[in-house]
Image 1 (cartoon, rainbow, N blue to C red):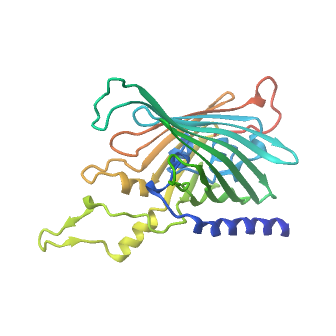
Image 2: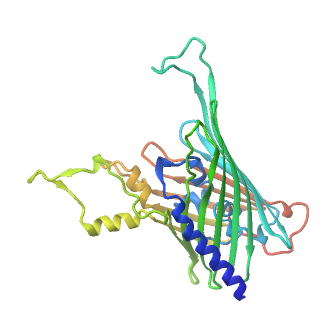
Image 3: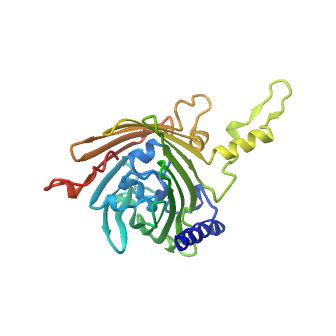
Length: 361
């Protein structure tokens, strides 16, 4: 037991030490599609990862410490109808080996659609044609329970990106550790996209991967059919704010620019790391989900009409052997992406199941 706890401590310490390697966010890194929310459940709860241990294979893509033996032979298909002709998603399959642990193989992609060749003024040339753009990650995840309380996991993900004739290849790693209390409380620490761009789009222009350090927790209430989720994102960088001239407000009496108080600035910076989510679970086979992402709302809102930017919602249900999920997440007034998924366990077909039902995902 002492040895296992020591191993977990070394892993968590390594995660914190790795924060000094990279602290870029926004448009300063490549392969940003790796941090997009992929599954309806993750999107509905407002973030891009979850600290929930209930046999949902889609959670393991971004939090490998959740990959478990209960996911053996599970298959998860996820699709996102993004803006214009862009779509992305992933497919995952999990298998467990007694001595090695549990594995999940995933193919994650984003398709940017088709584009028409034009000259620098936007006019079609005489020999105009079309080209495509897309990015792909082949993710091999591993998870293992150290004991009844702790689990660890890691993802290895080669990444390939192509934009017309410009190509790039990179290699990333995720590492994660989780604590599972007997009360139903779960906490996870995740370091994502540790790695580098191996081949670049152009010479002498090497870009970093979108590294992110995250912490999450969840708890299913004992006397209510409800689970809450709290996520802390971008822990490697405190200040996520930026200057937006549209937020400048001039006092009509003094003509001076209004500024936030020191306390207001600190609260704003702190809340940009926080994502809140909740699941209402009235039955074993149905759930309603909702979330709020403060950073998304602050960055994407329009002052004259804030609407529901930053909020998300969704639901999941089980019919026979299949788990279906749907969600919408409001990024901007321009529209809300649709998230769809179907998940099932191949082991449930062709024979009666004697183990405990996997439940709703």
